[in-house]
Image 1 (spheres, one colour):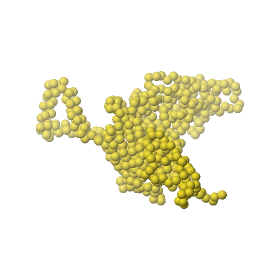
Image 2 (tube, helix red, strand yellow):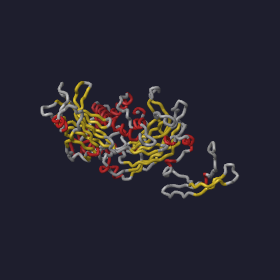
Image 3 (cartoon, helix red, strand yellow):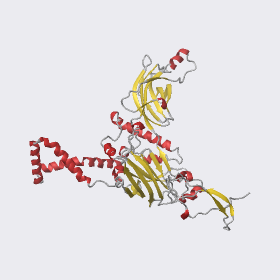
Length: 540
């Protein structure tokens, strides 16, 4: 018995002689190679069959490859947490639940005035109707509507319970109903009418000494519902100003892509130490639409090189791609991955067909920094947007950003905020099951999960944004005031001449306005952005 692993033989390759393979080339055929004694005496110790080639990221073996800058960590069994990975967000639906009425509901206790309500729940999403007094015929009427978020495959159930407020701290359940989400109708437009249905409530809390008449009455309790899965909405998981996808849930309503986005994550430099022992194990996460990508983790480097490339189909150029860098804190122990920085690139600022290679500063908000903003390093990216159809892209600018359903039956701001929080939680739970998992803190940072918290810096940014929007009107008012005061006599005379011409020929008013708009547009076209904008510190 050998006390330790002994080397039987080895094969040595000259990297300059290794052949290259680029898909869609066929895989290289394996060959038999002699295992030579490590002492170098030329004695063969056996043969081994293997194939050797130089591949690229497009190679099917790339995801399972060992990287030389983290080989020692892989040998210790930590390969799972450093692999590159592509994730896809689950297909999300809005579930509309209309609780209309209930019949034949009898409370157990008669020592108080019944105050009945319905509680609807899907996983940790809970809604309650208002309190309804019990009528003489044991019928209840609510007619209230609630919205939930559900993800395919539908693993949760819609649970409805009719409860009685016995005391301020106690609710008594009178009836219960659990329905799988797959039984509900899917609506793809605002026109079709969803038919309501009656559902029998389950027996709940029957006493041991109840007579048969009461048992039969309680079994006859039922509830009237109108439930449907909304496929014409886009389920919002990002802030509207940084949205990366505007497609509705149902693929039947999707429009063809207008372009292809290619992102090359080259590397980072001058990263700050993130761990107590002065190390940084960095990886990068990018998200656009339903596709998430995660690069491999580079162990112990302040200037990691990833050199990985990914592509996305673009359905709307008025969207944003988000790229963030994190420190992997799950290599030797379980912890929360630390955020290093995040950048966003608007696709509408990219010139079609041109490769934009640039270094972006990684900035995070820290209370310890003098200005509140601390530079954590720089991220080097290469981005190219290629338009497939200019006609389709121009047509998109004539349509609203979101699907039609958002304007026919809009949500309130409170509903949007609540549904978005639930959506972020569902995405984090689903992507957290992958191997390696995309952790909750990563999802929340990428999707701005803490946006509902008030921020002075964000409030100032919104104020400056509003002032920039109103600057044109304020400037026009100031210019008109100067004309009235004859601050510039030549300008005032020309304005009066133009006014008299328009009074004499009113049919020239609209052509003059349109000509002015065209001239201003052509004049400003020269200064249009030709590449990604710089990071605006005020909007962090």
